[in-house]
Length: 404
Ligand code: CTP
Image 1 (cartoon, helix red, strand yellow):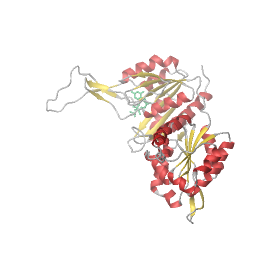
Image 2: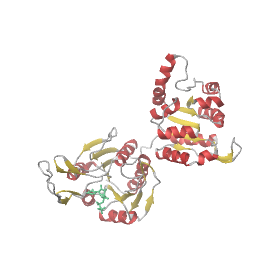
Image 3: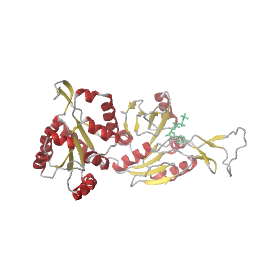
């Protein structure tokens, strides 16, 4: 595998030399990238000699105008050709730049252009490591799905004792190997019928009722299921997201359209995941013309939409049925009730109405109610990581259940 080893400026930069040798011994090609500060601690020649490759240094460091231009686009090439980005040592500054998307040197620019797994091994003074700013940046990077290899406790270069010393190379190499594991194809043979996003219930030709769902959790589930080998039929309400490549996308607007699309594809499905935030009510009549204001109050009569999940509960056959419950209180109780009432195998529940998780956010924190009575809490993480956690539980159900 091709690994980019980013070295940022800290005393521990010299340890990255031995790290690069271990990675090469494991059969990897290593491309070293050094920040300007790293060059203050170790000479690029050290890494060039060990890796047998020219070391990439700062994006604007070259004296020749031609070389500057080529190095400015080089990060895209390196990003496309590499399988993993490892940064060791990662300084507080590098973590902050990654967390906030600053791109002012080769390494931080490469980070933004890179789409593969990222492993970060921080090293810094213990107060810097424990500072609220660094804690927040590390939490953000973890939520994004990156692996952070926590530093060890020890005597630090500054003379203090505490956490901040670069993790031992064995631990960093093990994290790299884990991150490089080929993706499991454990959903091969399954067809997942997935609903995502909100629905829109028209009031008149220009207005509609909807909700705050962004569709991100459903799209993350679709991507994860595709990566794991499933066929995915994605019935999606209106969202501003690109459909995952390989998904069979069925676009719908209203709850009624979503219901019809779901039942049109039910036969093909082995697993149904109802992630969509379906509107529970729609205007009883859709006005043919725009409703004009009259100066007075207007009332809107609402009528229930079809409960797709409840109907699926009746018609699911031996398919696995997964519901979602977005609640603002009593999570466990309401989720367990929905599980039974709608005849699901599991209900994924999350608290909404709090900042940082749920609707419209990057991260999510969910609990899973199961038929066994268990209520399993998944750690707060990026929607992609949560999606894989949900699929892990679905997989257990598919393995436990006799199927067609
Ligand atoms: N759902 C559905 N059709 C509807 C409403 C909801 O299929 N008309 C599905 C959602 O896709 C989700 C689950 O039902 O999987 C739970 O949705 P939620 O709105 O949380 O629950 P409700 O059934 O509306 O119950 P309550 O009003 O008690 O919260």
